[in-house]
Image (cartoon, rainbow, N blue to C red; front, top):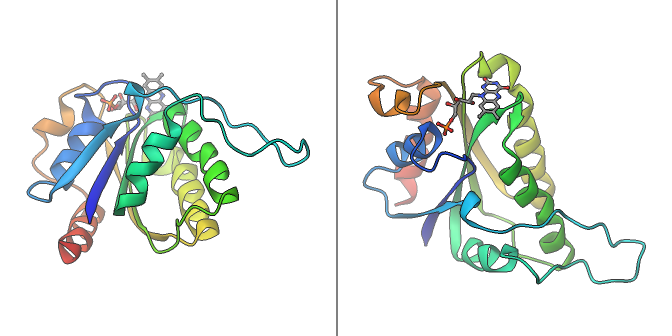
Amino acid sequence: MTVLLFNASARKQGNTATLGERLLTDIPHTTIHLMDHHLNFVQDNRDTGRPQADPTDDYESLMAQFATANDIVLATPVYWYDMAAPLKVFMDRWFDSYTNGFPFAGKRVYLLIVGADQPEIKAAGIANAVRYSCAWLKMDFCGVTTVTADGPHDIAAMTTFPASFGALRLNLEKIV
Ligand SMILES: Cc1cc2nc3c(=O)[nH]c(=O)nc-3n(C[C@H](O)[C@H](O)[C@H](O)COP(=O)(O)O)c2cc1C
């Protein structure tokens, strides 16, 4: 089963994408740049009688790919001490899929975070949001690595990564 890398950065060749590609070196995968896709904000139709679905954007086609993968790498830069909006909007829309019985359970999720200003401390909320969302959806949260970088080629130039990066890589090697 394929590995999917979702890059939430506005820089498609920037640090976040590069970190994802370096994590997945020699591991077959498909990269999806969320910025290439049109995603509407989630609607909350619980009290309206309308279906919890929005077929007018790219969400369903992204989830069709999601359905084929056992391993999902979510990669986000830190924007204003939180995840980048494309990932937030995408995750908000998981409510549509959850409501309609999408088979999230058992998928393995890995999280990559890149920020410039002490992201490990100041953007710690991102990991919690993803961890608890995975738990809610019965997905297996397989860990997070947070890397400090700012200039667009910082990650490409890095020769050492945090131990958490190595741990994620080992987890991924087990599945391929
Ligand atoms: C709109 C915007 C907001 C940002 N806010 C933060 C922030 O709150 N904390 C932080 O550590 N870095 C922040 N950054 C810096 C980016 O996280 C950093 O440059 C990162 O390496 C970008 O990854 P990329 O190369 O994949 O785009 C911000 C960058 C942008 C463009």
